[in-house]
Image (cartoon, rainbow, N blue to C red; front, side, top):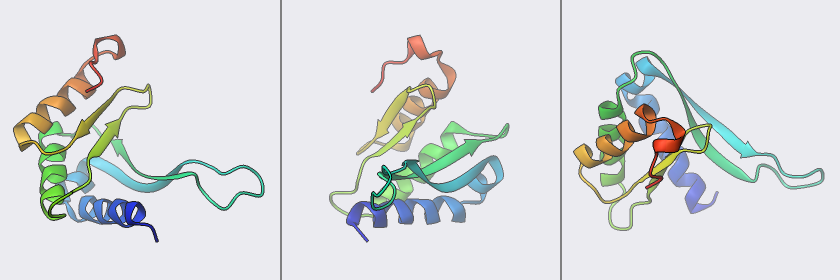
Length: 116
């Protein structure tokens, strides 16, 4: 298992253990793309969240920031991406800044997103 895969599995487990995330989203382990015929498995593993009506950007931000804090120095950034391509990256920032970024991602129309 690669370091990246181990980190994704850790984030997946963290989100599954978060009662708010489980209540408001379907947390899945997926492959973003399949390898070509004869390839050796998925090209990219992802943690997928199918958001429900009770979704809270604040709760997701807190959960991601808390998970990153358990990773120590060099914690990986977490990129949250919409199916339409809008995305934000959460790195070394306080939970309120992560929440602001997630709200901008989920509240804005695709042409209004800044992509940061």
